[in-house]
Image 1: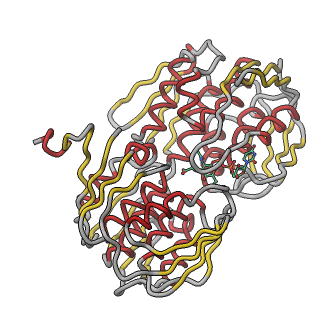
Image 2: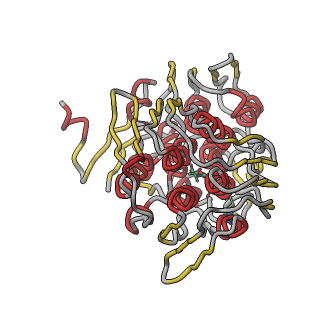
Length: 427
Ligand code: EPZ
């Protein structure tokens, strides 16, 4: 377990080039199984979730190596279709592998991913979609066993625009016989990035980013070199860091349009937001103003993955704010932790009523999940005094050296592994 000690009273300022996208890299890594030739990935983030995905790929027989910042994945040696329980259990997004393993080996055997801190995360839409492609799926003893022969293209109507289900079906359909049409597909930018990667490998996919995605199956893909898109959630997190600390941060190497809804919110909070083709600058102009109403929605709505971080900002804003979480049923666990820092909020089912306070105070808090942990870092930076964040390893699942990034922006986050300052260890 690792703790992070966050020093309060920070004012973040400066420039940060944002990491590669976790939520684009994970399905793309799963898709490397479809190419059967070496893949060179650029800008793949060095984060725990990606490392765990690489371990799973190795366990299936792939060879994985780094060449400088590039990642080379060669699935020619892959031979196993059974996903390891421990790793797959820790990494929920291993469920994306179901579609690509099934497509590659005509069968797949995976542990049920189970729920996590933000909700019970069912996979019914994934399994229904694979069954529509003629997969025979048995769920027994906490495992999912799929057999399929060559999958057959079909029309798949998703009851909900699930990101993971859309990606899983795209991956399974790439080598299926005939055409697959996914309707009510998720439209997130990460789906477009997956499509662009698949097309670079010779697969025939189009329509991603819109509610209907069409995949025409081909026998097999080929190798490619591909650059993973920038992480829009990490970018948004550091922008909110500027707003909550009264700072001035420019995030470069990003896609501003992918976080338009956040830019609008930050302007509504009183920040000065300026963007170029690949950067956004956020300058706080005094204390943020509260925002009457915000609700999370599938893209292009306000992203659920930035809800906790906005929650922290609104906790110190001038005025009251209402925040509704429509995507996950249990994604307010950071609210209680913020209260330990003297925040004022009330949670009524999926609605948070936030009363902004002048100042939070450092406390000992728990990172219950990845984005909730990031929200507590932001709150700690703006608080008076020191905040200790327990289980900070959960933050490292999705943020590439957030402590160093914040250090470069003028903040202080010290990592303690089993109580020993990492900073001391490196001196
Ligand atoms: C992806 O999760 C992201 N993870 C999540 O990011 C993100 O919050 C989410 O999409 C929504 O944008 C990755 O890409 C690795 P969903 P996913 O399927 O695919 C319900 C982060 O912090 N649902 O769109 O699991 C589900 O319960 C993570 O980076 C079903 O009911 O999200 C949820 O309420 C957190 N049945 C809603 O849909 C299903 O079969 C959205 O889930 C699948 C989903």
